[in-house]
Structures are given as C-alpha cells and as structure tokens.
Image (cartoon, rainbow over all chains, first blue to last red; front, side, top):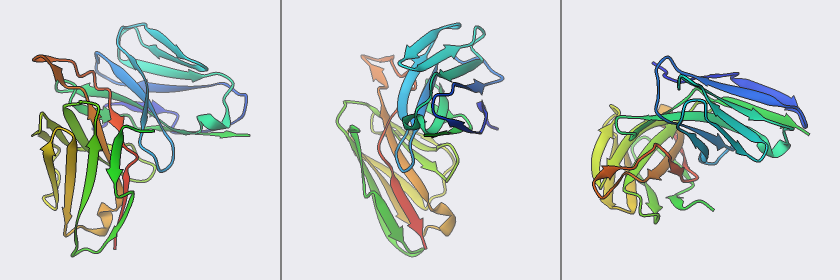
Length: 111
Length: 119
C-alpha cells in the first residue's frame, strides 16, 4: 500500500509559469522531506518540514506542511528549465529509518 | 558533488554472474540504505543498516546480499539475478543516533546510483 500519494503525476509547463505539486497521506506524520531527482542521478534533499502549518522557502520554491500534518505542497514560482526533474516527497517510519517515498511528480519545464 | 560515492556507475551482468555494488560515505553517518528504482517509479527501500547491523530487510530475495564492513562502507552482493532486477540501485546515508538518542529525521543523502542491466 502506497502511503504517500502525489499529484499530478506528470506536469509539462512553459518557462516562467507557476506550478504546485501535492503530497497527501491518510495518516499523520511528524516530519516530511521533499527531494528532487534529475535523470541518472540520486535524489537530492530540498527541505524538511516538521510543524503543522509550517512554510519554508528555498529561492523560488515554497514548501508548506498542512495544519493536520497529513499533506504537504511544493509551489514553484516562475519555473525554469533547471527545475526539470522528478519531485518526491518522503517520510520516515519506525524511528525514521524506514524512509518511504511518494509516487512522484515528473516535471518538465520547456524553454 | 555528492558525499556518498557509488561504484560502478554502470554494470552489465549475465544471470549466472556474481558481482558487487559498493557505496562509501565519510559524513560520519551511522545509518546506510540500499534502494532500488525502476524507470519512472520512486525508489523502493531494500535494506537499512544501523551501526553496521542490518536493521531492516524489506523481504528482498536472497540473490541480493548486503554487507556493511564498517561504518563508512556498504556493499550489495549480486548473484543469479534476473532480467527484471535491472534497475538503478541507490545508496543513501543518514544520521541515526547521537549519544544514544534518536536524531534521525529521515533526511537521506544519496549517491548517484549504479545502473544495473541483467542480460
């Protein structure tokens, strides 16, 4: 059973557009990570959110943790071709060792 | 540059071969992971080592055999693999415990992966 559902699965947009990616779970989690993975590379950690309602910004990326800590979103402003990649949310279970990933959102930003 | 190094970057092997994937980290992390990733899918957890002891095995077939010789190294020994085992194999590390208390927040640091093709 997949614990973390992401939407949309695929997104193809023009450079300069804004977008939002969602990560949803039926259960509460105490922290959540967002990663970006480029083709042929390993995922790279972008951010960790811990507190319900928390908002973190990383340049043009804004991450939000839902008040009930069951969902999270990633908003990208003025997307650039360098933002192209697979975006993954992840959570740790069992003392955080069992880190499982969401279904993923594949983003393509067209110049 | 990633601080988790995986070798080889690419590996092609036959179903009767024995080969190994290697992973090394020098961040002082005490938890190390193997993930398998098929095309267009998220990484799937295979094994977790904590303080050089196997702590999680996600019901992985015995043709995959992990080994953690010391706190910096993690190997994955491969024997009698099937074509469907072809995938990107990712190694990761994370902080686990510090002075006996859990500090692991689930933040993983990945290598670039080893692309395995089984013929």
